[in-house]
Image (cartoon, rainbow, N blue to C red; front, side):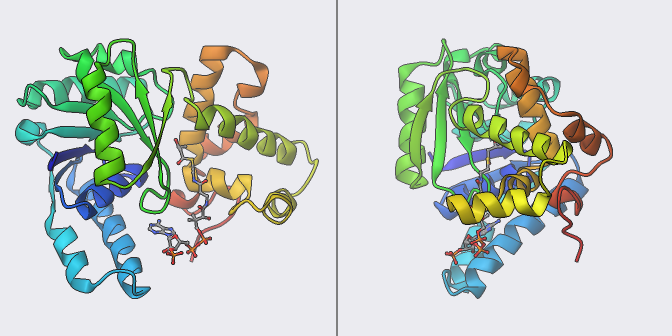
Length: 284
Ligand code: 3HC
């Protein structure tokens, strides 16, 4: 597959657009307006510049990757895409609406419609289309150019052919490691990760330990590359909140409910790195 569409160019979408363009595909990114397009492109260019500056990529190669990318606000331009990966905000209504639009726009009868959702059941998104057998979850990890994992989630209606083609694209074209997950809230990784992040937030909220000590404990004591609060800031507090809500809705276990501190910070717009302030400050 070398005509790829990516819908949404936020934290995850920009990473997905970058890795698919790096793999040589012609990538069309759909965003809602010029401002969002500008921010997405800036993120991709920053990431490419980082690779060039550190000597891992030739400048010519980064130009080639940049040339593989184009942007639009018009869903109908997805018409000729063979694979479309949706990566808009983690909100069911928004994703359903986007899936209806992708389904209406894409004309290739064999196209795969994938979602990078962290927690919304794949079957719900599949049922918003006329081709549920071609809908699959391809869940990437942030930062997408660095982390090698893709979770592949087939719904009850995903065809074996769709699963095989998506797996082959992720492993062969994108050089990712694939694990498979059932279509359950959180899939494999977030079902393990989010309760851990929520525990750290509760620990901070109750005054049990400071943010610095919680993170230092896990980095120095358990060799994690970053502590749980810095990781929540990286993922985004709004996304963490949305995944926690989905997990709680599905399993109704108290430890999956978002702690009040997470809700209040999200309501206050303290989203982590992307807003400049979360559990730590990122203002330069
Ligand atoms: N884009 C591209 N490359 C990046 C990058 C980015 N945003 N951030 C870091 N890198 C690259 C650097 O260039 C560097 O490459 P090199 O080793 O080849 O030179 C490498 O990553 C390490 O970066 P740094 O030296 O700047 O910083 P660190 O060593 O502190 O690593 C990190 C930063 C990669 C973010 C690391 O701390 C890490 O892996 N943290 C854990 C992240 C994690 O757990 N993510 C999963 C989140 S869960 C998720 O995404 C699912 C969702 O559904 C919630």
